[in-house]
Image 1 (spheres, helix red, strand yellow):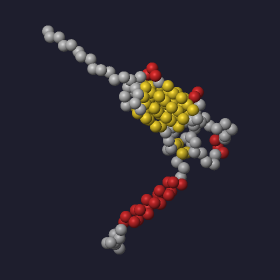
Image 2 (cartoon, helix red, strand yellow; image 1 turned 60 degrees about the horizontal axis):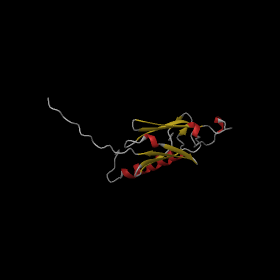
Image 3 (spheres, helix red, strand yellow; image 1 turned 135 degrees about the vertical axis):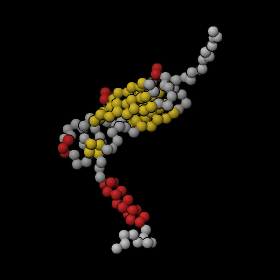
Image 4 (cartoon, one colour; image 1 turned 90 degrees about the vertical axis):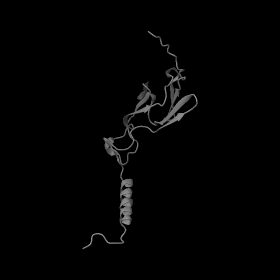
Length: 147
């Protein structure tokens, strides 16, 4: 019995299989309590403007008390947490799409930042961080002496 028939297209069978797997994965919620495959940290946008960088992050449901920002060695770290809804029983969920718990996000900044002008604002669930650019340093001449 022939396994492969001449003239038979395998691409149709693989296309059907790919479609079926896609439909199965779309119907499965991969965010399980304790085991999250979804994004645990907020999505961000980083803008490179003339004299500063602007970072915006969606962190709805996070208060300023549950937020920590730090910058060191050209890396900005945003830490936060979203609490479980008050009065919600963990065992009573029928659908849970809003993750809760602690998260951390670290971003490498493309250039040095002037640390004296940093500021952040949280309004309507959007965190806006302004990072002023440091002035470009001019090269210094180093005198060479002969001995």
